[in-house]
Length: 447
Image 1 (cartoon, rainbow, N blue to C red):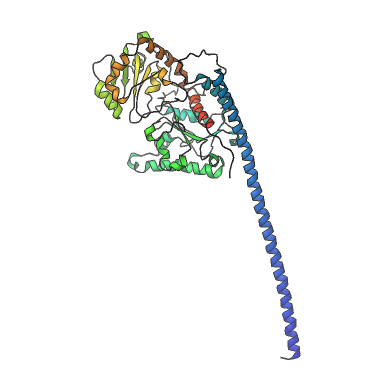
Image 2 (tube, rainbow, N blue to C red; image 1 turned 90 degrees about the horizontal axis):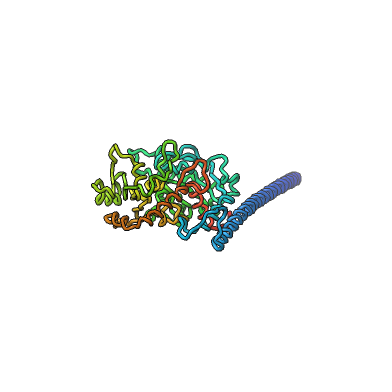
């Protein structure tokens, strides 16, 4: 290589080295800048997440403080035996387990309780329900929760004490069930509810902070309890408000709520009356209804369509007999289970001033955390069905008179009002949910 060539090579190599250093330096600065941007973005996201957690914790602390104050007031009323905004004279034997606790709790509920109804989903499976026939209370409740002007409706989910999932199981069955496609339907129904929960879990923080312990739905359909069977872990804390409140089918009284089944007429508001005077009720006990389920089969075996004027049990009434009139002429009305434990017979008896005779197994009576059913009903074990007449005849007339009077007194707690009114059936459902929320406490959001 000549001297000129060597010099040219050195110069070229130096220029290339310089360009490489410049390029590397530029790239390195670019990478450094990108890392700086990524680090800043990450810190912003962390700060935003922390801010949300802090904001949510402040809101939750406020909610828990309100509940703590309510607990103190309820406890005070129990200790002092004082009645909140109620001038009723309380005797030793009332229709309530503890009237002081109930009236104060109801007052605190009206003053404090806020419910957030999720907006996700479309009619008719969500935000709508039946408002007539035997599952009408399901639709009535959804209607009340969706009603503008409902004073218990939360304006913002952060102020809510509980969260309502406005799914109608009855409507899911009505619109989607087909007898020729019955196989696998329960799984489809379960999937609809589970998918809804997953949507709100992913979109909002509220389910995740409590594992659903402050969330509830309302179902009067016989299949309502089946919703949680496929994924018990998802529903282990979830409040199920059910008509079919059967312990043997997984109903948990400390978590779930037993709700009244009501056979709503076409105009949606059932008639409530005192019926005949207790002195003019000539029938000892009455029942009319389909012979299905093992309890009714046993009832019909011993008492069905027999010539006994005292115990009148019919599968189908003669055309010249009026069902409501017979209820109002009876001292006691038999309320046996059918296919499931829930039945509208209980409320039909109460609506006509007839003392209910509860013949069920595993049934948790509605609102029994508040109401003392022994004061206005008779409970007969299934194996005692053959002795029903003897059991009822041995109740002194004076005792019957006391129970019948209390049936009239308890009617207000089973009455349907739209919009809801103080102490009516919709408020009793809400109060049961309120009690379950009082029984749990959440400290903070974790994410």
